[in-house]
Image 1 (cartoon, rainbow, N blue to C red):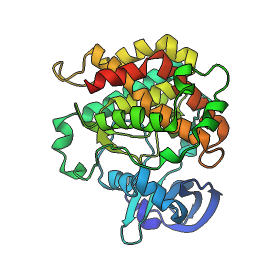
Image 2: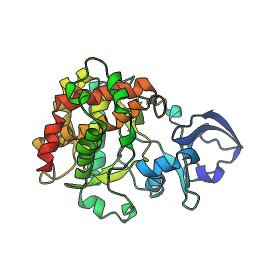
Image 3: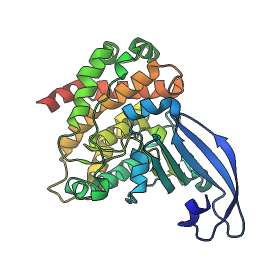
Image 4: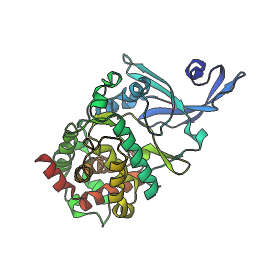
Length: 338
């Protein structure tokens, strides 16, 4: 640990490490409390490594080494995110280790679906995504040899086994008929996969890839940070924009503010006028993007407590379901295919 911290904290010498918190999910995660001899360093760090029980799932849906490759590359990201002290990869063992800052030392406020963002906070997050996308838009990404490994966002198999009726029932009596009428086959084959396949068309950029509210935090109650970059990919900007905004706000706040926030996204793109998507293109991509959040969170909600707390999964499934009806996503997907 002394070597790991040395670049950012010259002169430190770690004398003891204690596991202060263990919080495993699809990866192994822990907070480590540190003590020093002489020059002090951070009181604690956060570590993340592959969990053998979930390796096949991670390889299928996320990519085992995307996050450590991103932070190991040293590519600066123009958004708030946890500082990473070390990103180690063992390809033969299919394992990795990330040592990063403990965000609690900056009083970060992690959010999830039970604590949605305000309109102003969500707009801040959308502007951050615009900065990220601008930095790597089009040729700016193609000309980065340190990001040649970045894969396109493509559909994966496995969600077709989800017991969708369980999630539909959990949506409650106000669920839109356009969603309650869906079968799992229609959801995957007619909605999700066509949208995901469309992400390789149009301008390509670096995508966070999993920018739902559960992968965000607030600094000073204002600035939105993004963590868990395991699904980082290249693809169409609409995936990050829609997945974040449609899940981060209550249904009522989204309906009232999304048009203004979409304009905020376009205005925040640091691109020449000729490269910026038009307002109509942004709205079309945004409407189609509901396909991703709807599918992932209906499938997650259908699994009970297996992958996520049910209150979180159902809250997000409801938000994306409402957006699917409000934004007429089926029509947007039809137009996208023409």
